Length: 157
Image 1 (cartoon, rainbow, N blue to C red):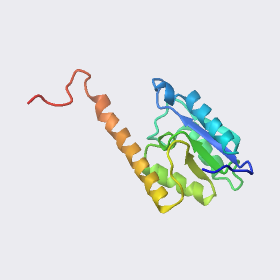
Image 2 (cartoon, rainbow, N blue to C red; image 1 turned 60 degrees about the vertical axis):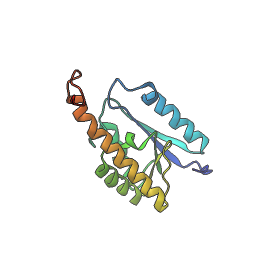
Image 3 (cartoon, rainbow, N blue to C red; image 1 turned 45 degrees about the vertical axis):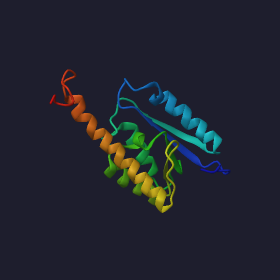
Image 4 (tube, rainbow, N blue to C red; image 1 turned 30 degrees about the vertical axis):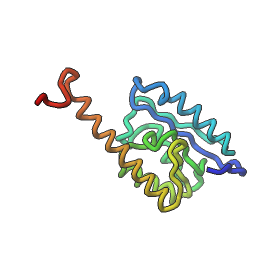
């Protein structure tokens, strides 16, 4: 993304789904990367929203809902929402489509600082694929987490 010389206001959104996240996914690491990206690209940070120990599969996360509510106002305090990865915004494709469509109608874009997806047809396709893979990954974690740790993943022949 090219530098934005008019200091467009941005919101930073960081999320972890549990207290056991890897260090590179920690809220502190996400916010540090988001702040660095905003500064390097000429954005002014209007607000930071953080949800800790909140699943990306649900939309009713306190800070996420507040950010969406702020973004839906006639005079939203930001024009862009920066996320470390699209999976931090949501892990459900239907939520991604609904919320991003509503935000776009208000002139607000959701930008992943690590996954390139622009407004070209190819960029939109890539974003949809990334969102679908994020949902697939999340849905696959449920059965794996529910299975016994001693249970083999493959039956012996």
